[in-house]
Length: 300
Image 1 (cartoon, one colour):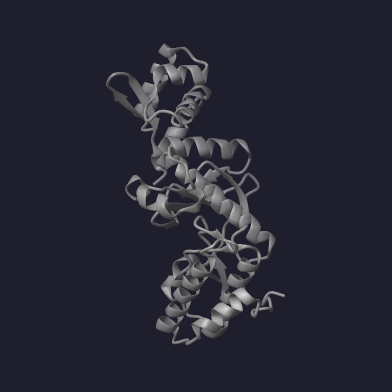
Image 2: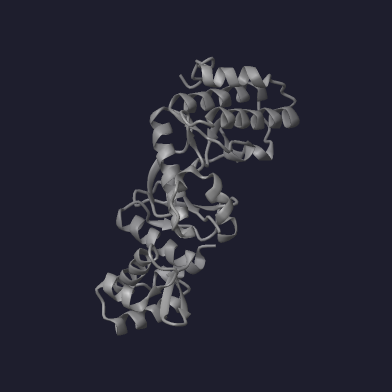
């Protein structure tokens, strides 16, 4: 939960953020950033850095290691503070709830509010150390980077997801509206709905599935393949589908895009057959998605 982070955030001063930011920058070169390097990057004296670092360590924002040298790294809570501070300064966020409204394997989602009073979803990507090696093997946004921290990988996931939402929203695909992002945090429009995985009652499950395939086809036409689509990534919002959770997307020109499209479609069809008794031919569905066979936008 964010309660500890929000409590810490209230106690931070500009110099504290300078040290947090310096440690963040230093982590690109060091596993634990030496105090001397933090001083150089922050423009503060080493004694001052040590005093501030002790405070940040007590708040759980930095982790300290003493060995051949004294060094610090950001904790996830410290990274949260940097991202939230930036989004508040940009005028994107005014407040955020302390308890999550949704949790996934690699993310937490909270409800937030903008200065204009608009509700938003605030998603924190949390690519954990335990899954780091596995995710590096298949996440295209990691590429060939050999030195990459798990915090930075979370940042790449957020950037990737925001880019997908930007492309898809412009193409009128039914996704949350992209608002902004910073570091590992994505802010999007808040959508009131029920996750499809809960198998909510649908007035017409067949029509809902048809409409969902339309959205998958529109995303493909816009150059985006979800690549991890299932009932856990679809909201039922006023009986209409909204597709979310896009950090793992691949381009429709990717060599493996057809494999991912097929897997996405098969996941959806299996769920509808199991939960709603809707039988749909897999090959026909795939042809319609990638071949433009699904033409009509139900919202038109």
